[in-house]
Image (tube, rainbow, N blue to C red; front, top):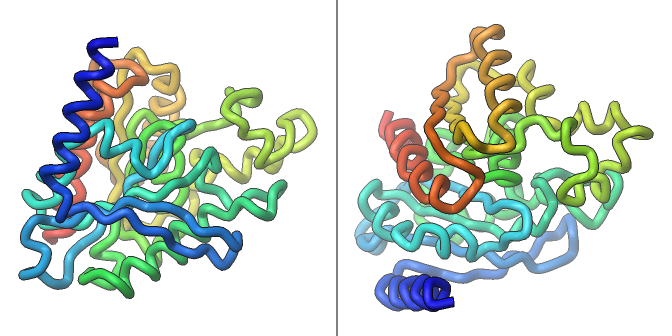
Length: 267
């Protein structure tokens, strides 16, 4: 209990310190007819900048728009260090698909079109795929690759940390059958909505980073994705290090991913 209280106090102190850098906004999704909450993290010198690149950072299952900031309170510092905007949408438990089973869940459309359009209209962004990247953790790692691969006109780079990059070994987990139907009766639909089956869409210009801890329950599907990318001669960065499916791993890994995207934006 003391540890939880200490972490909460630290998070609140960081939020207070960086209040001017953090916007909490609601964006109307026309496709879902609902307002979606998002966190927008600005570099400290935002007012003197223009043409800023944007990293869209996706939470995992059970999370929300605040999850990444709670996990990594230093995100405002990193936004300032690398001169980028970081946007964290509330993706519910959507897996960032446009669900074929639930017409009220269209989070691919929301993030890749509606949210990007709003951010470009209301913030000083570089309005080109060379200034946009998307990544996330776990469910959001799946989302980062899913959105990046399927929307290469929008995002120039994408990534995943501890991502569920092949959902098919987990047919009864994380509410996925609510979006896709049960696996036994809808196996083709599951094939069509898993990242590892989207690789034929990848163009050489897409920058990709993937990492996963060696003790993670998603480690084997990430290894399989890495091997398939190598087989197809698709350029990507792949990192494994000791670690499990937890906040300690993600708080560390996101710094490497942000550096990767900063280098991409700087090209």
